Length: 183
Image 1 (cartoon, rainbow, N blue to C red):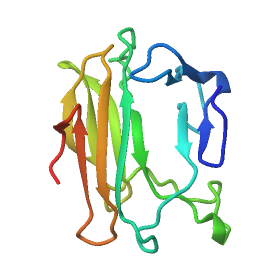
Image 2: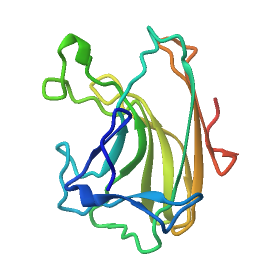
Image 3: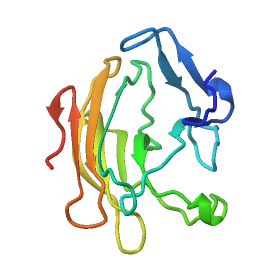
């Protein structure tokens, strides 16, 4: 099972949905398998996820230039339900409550990810997209890049993000060492 620690936490219908497995593995001795079924609900949504516990504040942290990377594979037998299309977030970055000032998730306004990598499909195939933006009355998340993928194949994704509250912020994304986005 996947342990909750001071670095990582997990949300799933039950802990069996998140497991360290020996196969399939991209490299090394294993991988984390996340499983979610249509009726699963965790943290008020249909999800199975792992989360980094600590956060980053571009207004106060001395580092704003950050790199993130992971590998993923969509299984060959993964079912894309064209009658009920749903997106799946494969990685996201969003604001969180200020726990030091007494905020918590129960009282926190619904804040979708500001940057996300999402899996989806259409009549041409399945793929991933890079989305950016807030979802409220003023902003709608925009897909700013997409590419098709093959199920059953491992992909390496790298994000370079310059976190900023002004115009010098950016995100760059590579999939298997090829640019998915422009700066």
